[in-house]
Image 1 (cartoon, rainbow, N blue to C red):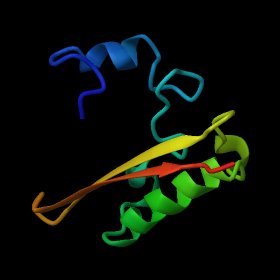
Image 2: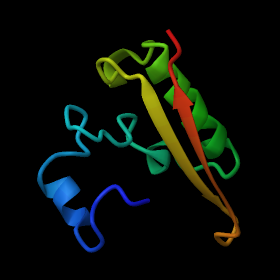
Image 3: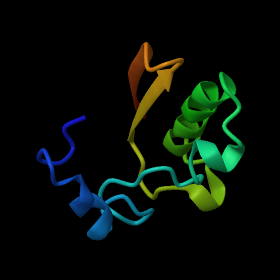
Image 4: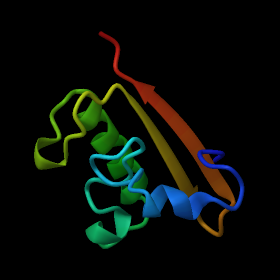
Length: 90
């Protein structure tokens, strides 16, 4: 996705970028496997959780000041892939 230079993705984790309070928080809900990964429902869940963040209604999972969300989903044998970018409009 180009969020870090090629081969340096480990830095995002080691330096805390992807933690809830980091500059690039990822999966504050625990991710899809935390939901048991029900095929089909997980893609919908990712969008619902992203919208909850943007509406500032995510409770304990809320990222303060969330205004932009990215959702990346792969389906099947990686043949159905999509990215959605959602933005809070004030």
